[in-house]
Image (tube, rainbow, N blue to C red; front, side, top):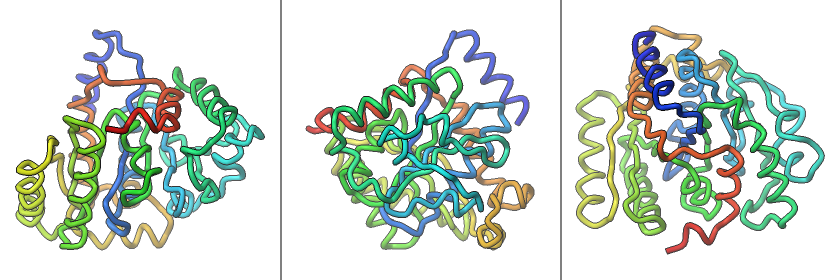
Length: 287
């Protein structure tokens, strides 16, 4: 891990890159482990010395705080309504990750007034020098909010499982995203698989239909094997990668993070404030 970290750091230094990379982690349906994966990806990235901001934008089921057993005093709602700056609501999580807690009371980010949009932009723009990577945990499904959160990001990581309903909903998400933004690249990660063969078979099923009928590029970035330690850690409100560093699920996620960092496309990066400006500019994603 340390060797790869050094290679990545040297490449970034040589290129003079300082922009912030945003990765939206999403799913076609709930219950596929999206939030758990998003949280643990952020934690592993800290081990590469990355400055990681984890933003909870699962507005209906904001639960990163529950997953980690933390109790934020303020949420994103306080920033939107001008009561707090974003730096005042950030909570520090495991390994030093920074967490922006969400509020399930935000019904529609697209309908914020001009003052609220500007408040978000200005507040988050102040983080550009303090963050390397933003991990966005979106909601599940194809609501307008979820689509905006996903399409505003540099990169899309779609989580699914081998279950038929999850595969169907993942395809529905891919279909909608491809219609909203042409030539979209979607990174695909298979969770809770019984074997590598099952994960590979799941990807083939999705890719076969997607590449035949949709204008989209699918990039298979890995899988996570079923591991009872994940459920144990969740019940304990601890990240499984920290509680069980040598378990098979952690090994799978380490490989995913190594792939994500090795294949970083920093030319597509933007500032943290710009991400929120793009979210609220719904028209930018039509057509």
